[in-house]
Each structure stands twice: as C-alpha cells, then as structure tokens.
Amino acid sequence: MLYADKEALKTDIAVQILRVREKELGYYVQNLNTVSTQATLLAGFTFTFLSNLDFVEPEEGYLSADALRKLGLDGVDETDAGALSWNWSVWLKQLLQVSFICVSYSCLFINLWCT
Image (cartoon, rainbow, N blue to C red; front, side):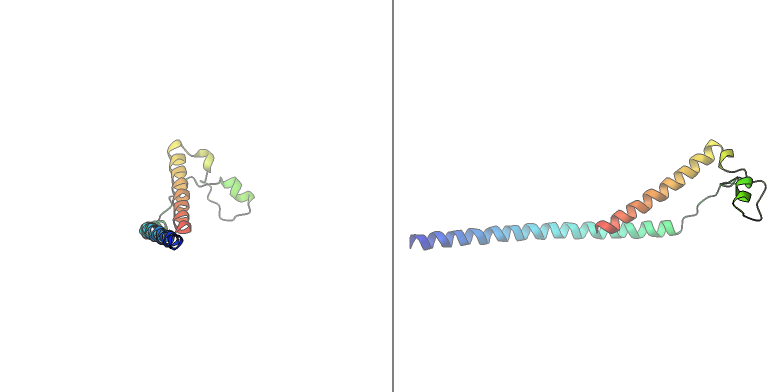
C-alpha cells in the first residue's frame, strides 16, 4: 500500500509538472504570435515604402562620358563628368540612399525569415 501511494504521488507530481510546462509553452507561443504579427505588419509597411521610393540620380552621372564611350554606349551626354566630379553633398546623399536601401531590405529579410 505504501509503495502504491508513493507511485500515485509521483504520478500526480509528474502531471502537475506537465501542466505547468504546458502553460509555459502556451505563454511563449502567445508571445511569439504577437511578435510575428507586429513583424509582419512592419514588413508590409517597409515593402510598401521601398516599392514607392524615388532614387535621386546625381546630375553629373555615375560614369564619365569617356567611360561610357569605352563601354560601347551610344548617345553619351558630354556633360556627364562621373562620380569623380561630385562634391561632398552629392557623395553623402548617394551614400545615405544606398545605406538606407541596404538596411531596409536587410531588416525586411530578417523580419520575414524569423517569423
């Protein structure tokens, strides 16, 4: 009788532990569902913003007229001086645009990959 009571007590404790673990698992699942909903919403906003983004090209062009002719392109604008003629504000603007696009797409990828 004592052995049976001991085994019943072990079984009851095991069931209680499983109930606690089930509650804990439900808590984590609920938290992850909340985070995935927010991440999906942010990913949608980011995609909408990036699909409507206007990338500003510099007036001087990216390559000089000589470089464009060497590449075999026709109809070269002779006023294109290329990136070497950019002043600091054009360099900064181009650098910030490229970094913004890279960071935004990286965050979008991470949001979609992790959820």
